[in-house]
Each structure stands twice: as C-alpha cells, then as structure tokens.
Length: 123
Image (cartoon, rainbow, N blue to C red; front, side):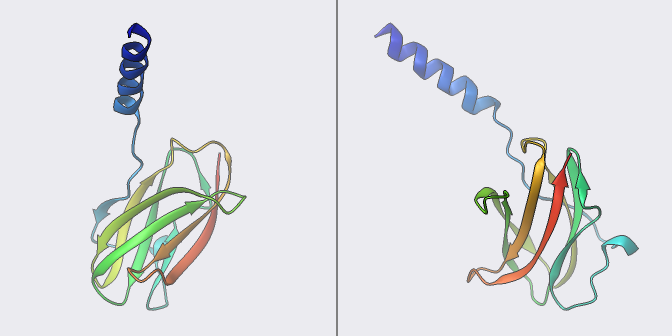
C-alpha cells in the first residue's frame, strides 16, 4: 500500500511540474525577417533556437491549425493547436523541453493537409 501511494505521489509531482510548450500569439505586426510571400506557410525567425523562437504562421483563412515538431527520426515530439486569423500570425514557440538536435516543424490544417514545413536546430 505504501509503495502504491509513493508511486502515485511521485507521478503527481512529475506531471504537475511538466511544462507544456505551446505556441503563444504575440504581435500583430510582422517583422521583415518573418515575412512570407506565399498565401500560406510557416517561417521561423532563425534556424538556430535555444529556448524559444518566433515564427510566422500564414493562413488563407481563419482556422484552427496544428503545429507539429518532428525529431530526426520523423517522430512527432511536440504537437499543439492554435487558432489563427487569415493572413499573418506571429507566434512564440517554447523549445526548452527539447534536447539539442535537428528538428522539423510543420503546419497542418484541420483536415491534416500540410500548409508549410521548415527545419531548425535546437542548440
């Protein structure tokens, strides 16, 4: 009984301390380095990331999009959804939970269609 209680307590502490790395909308004006010329896509401010990175998510229509981060084995290591407006949407993505490696970040519509994809390196 003590063992089950201890395992449950440790699990609750671990889950309670886990940080979710969710994209956060930040600004209305798009900086030049994040400008996207096509009607939809994704662009990071830098291909080299430490704990966070700004990105522009551009959509033809207002919709809910899914942002997936893939590791070098093409496994999804982070997945989140965000409501975006038509046009440019500057978001901040936190990458502190990711180990140093190469990653790919993809943008998908509600039907699972790829709207854009790009690579970055977590330092």
